[in-house]
Image 1: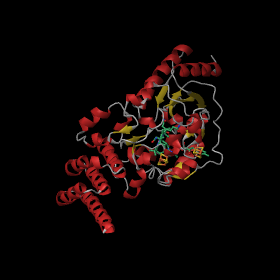
Image 2 (image 1 turned 45 degrees about the vertical axis):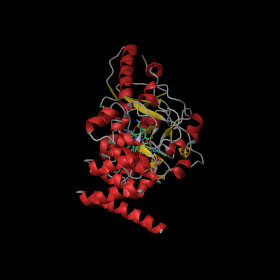
Image 3 (image 1 turned 30 degrees about the horizontal axis):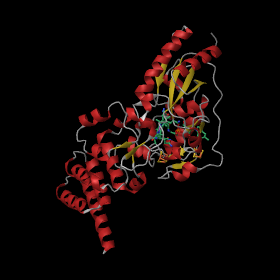
Image 4 (image 1 turned 135 degrees about the horizontal axis):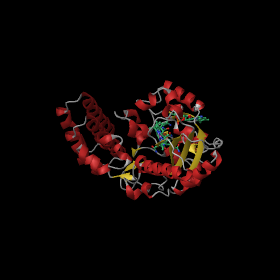
Length: 386
Ligand code: B12
Ligand code: SF4
Ligand code: SF4
């Protein structure tokens, strides 16, 4: 069977499996993507994501992942679960891609069975690497080469028919398949994402500085959310969708995911109950609560840190007792420090008392700085009222 017929069968099988987009490219290096990655790394924009500091050649050459590679299959699956309802209940906002089950697990299962079905249909043994958002390959670049879409100014890959709310999944195969033409499209004169990014993280068209991106700050970041960025984080507790929400391609084209695993009812949904999350004290409790969803990624302390920031920004007076619990009892200095910040933002009498008490007994220097800054802020505000 020739590469063209094999490509046709791949498309048929992938669509049966529910993938919305299917494309193929050769296993040659992703030269332009590699160059852009190098510049991004050199500018420090990879922050402290260890896996993004690997040499650009490793991330841009499929053959480094599988020596016998002949084709890279790029698949797209819409995760769009709808839009956030109004945040009337004061919840911690979750980015759409994370409302349901953990996509790594869900997609990988389907990739495995797609590969098995392909072997059966083509009657050959196929050596394959199957992954999504896990192995260090420039997945957006490979997908653009495979015709899935074009790079938007927000750096997301946009497809003219379904927008950008889709995951990219890959199969690197030792099988020759007819390649697709590279994806094309344009943002035209639009710059909405660049103007709307709350932290100014989109430094140039297609270039996102992870150090400023709310998605990085609330998911990959292991340390504190810099004080000067906390207000801009607003109510986002996990990820950020702003630069996709404003995109006209999504406004017009986003189509609901056909995979039930990505719907709100199967996982964390659009909002976290902030007080509930702030009450989680042990790793076991955390794992049990979020197991099987993407929300385990930042770890317990990271997610509580995010919920503290959201609570402070939302001025959640009802959350004060739980925040006081975090400040006085949590074992993680990261959580205690951000709880102090949130109490300083809310600033009622109970918050002020709890902060003064904590000042007497807090052992961690970083937390003491947070508590002092929160108390100074409160003092400044009450002076202003006099
Ligand atoms: C590190 C990472 C992040 C980091 C850094 C993001 C970034 N923009 O670099 C952080 C944590 C911030 C992040 C956030 C998000 N991520 Co992310 N992330 C990745 C990861 C692991 C690597 C991305 C990367 O290589 N960055 C380095 C830069 C240099 O590369 P790049 O952004 O892909 O940019 C390319 C273009 O510039 C391109 N390029 C080449 N030629 C040209 C020409 C022109 C004109 C232009 C403009 C660009 C261009 O070359 C670059 C290299 O490929 C990929 C998975 C993977 N292995 O690829 C997922 C991935 C990019 N993330 C994904 C998602 C869903 C998100 C979020 C939407 C999640 C959320 N809601 O919070 C946000 C979106 C933020 C944004 N605007 O990018 C999806 C994107 C799917 C899509 N349709 O684009 C991916 C592909 C995961 C997946 N398998 O589905 N992410
Ligand atoms: S995900 Fe949010 S913070 Fe990151 S670039 Fe987009 S709008 Fe900016
Ligand atoms: S918002 Fe506008 S500039 Fe940004 S990615 Fe979408 S079309 Fe391009």
